[in-house]
Amino acid sequence: MTNVVAGLRDIVNTCGNWLEYTQLIERKNGNWSIAAGMEEEARELVEKYKDKPLLDRPDNEEYFQGRYGLRPGKTRYTSRRGKNGRVSPEDIRERLVLLYVEEYAKTHYIERVDEQLITTISNKSGVPFKDAERILSRILSGKYPHGFKDRFLQEYIELSRGGRDKATEFEKATSSIFADVFGLRAEHIGQKGIVPDIVVASRDEKWAGILDTKSYKKKYSISNDHKNRMLEYIERYSEYGLEFANLSFFAYVVSDYGKNINSQLENISNRSGLLGSVITARYLARMVERHQKNPYMHEEIRKIFSVNRAITLKDID
Image 1: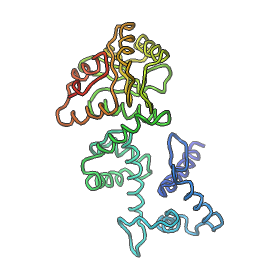
Image 2: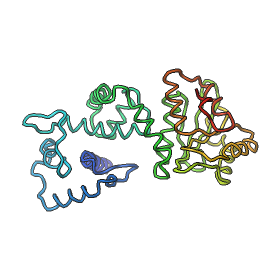
Image 3: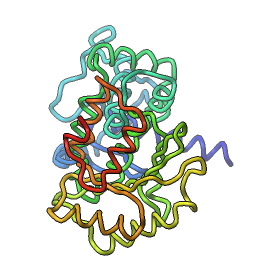
Image 4: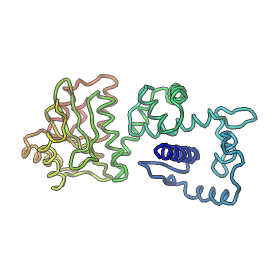
């Protein structure tokens, strides 16, 4: 029975890969949906093919792509064609890898191709590990010679004001900055109950910080409810925190903040005995850029997030 279920999952994943190749659907957290702005094209596609007979050569990858791999009225993907101008299996694999790595790069900071990246993209796309490795190397040396840094940072700032729909992605991207850029231990735990979104820590220096990200379209102010939650996070740190690190600060990561933010931070600090801060996504992106030129020491990062007010450019530069 286990093998049957696994086989069905493979079939479903393959079906999803082909549908995603058309760029008309999106898959997130197990949910399939029509991509935003593609609803009309999807309707046209259904109308065009609903009465057509099924393919007589379903196992022929090139034949399938030639018949069904295009949006209505669109031309074929032509980066590397096989004989007779047909889209080759390599084209299909490259398109799938590109789609998945660009999606992954929205919430993960990527500078190079490593085993973890290859494994992740291979699993998501269904492209074999060796093929994914070769294609990723080609993509980064060609289309993205400087890595995905600029794409990630641009997307990160947009996520910060994306509202509830983008909240989890914003949390994951923030966690990636602290782990993949600053080299800290970062755990995204925000979906596990009454806990902060992220715990960051320096194993060498034995300190930790808790982060709450707020993906708001408007300026963020710490409401009474949010204040009480943060106080509870601080008090209960020993229940979810990292055993090797003592809690040193709390912080909010936001798109922008209201004029009373400093007094609101001070209120939490006075009641908890812990220093805090708030930083905008734009300034955190600025820290990433500064770190590439002149890396922060872990102690510098701790001090920046312990200023007990809104973090300014002077603090990070």
